[in-house]
Length: 175
Image (cartoon, rainbow, N blue to C red; front, side, top):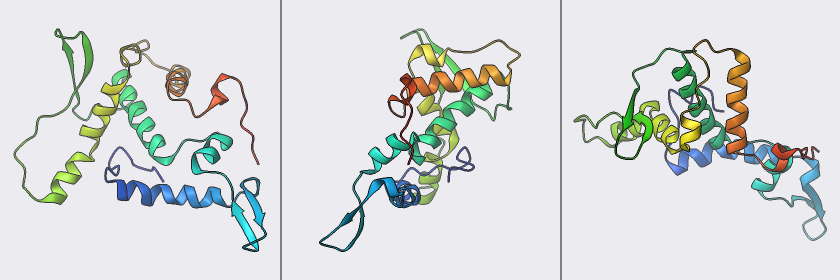
């Protein structure tokens, strides 16, 4: 569901909800979240979507897309993938290193053009990356990265954005 999110990721809440509904409806069907309702004569889900995600130990699809975009920027920084044109800035004003969001070029006033631009990787990726705390943004391994080093970056990001208590040693209760 998050394939090619670097190319396009929805920004309108309607599109986000449509994509998220796939996982939301699928997790409704797990037996461990259902109870028989006598009045209706059928099985009903008794857990909220957030509770289901926490129990299963998985992210929402929106969070997975955001996480992947941040990891892709880390890949650009350490040279695992080519830089498509992102530029870094070091601000003397607030000592904050970040990625410069490209200036707004004069574009058409057509709404779909504005939306496509706002949902592109060049705007969403740097915005997400710049929201990370400084100690995460400046976390760059040695110049010749390995898969193991990138895995440690993924773990650090997961600890920053935990799914639930699973990170602190508690295993998820799978159905």
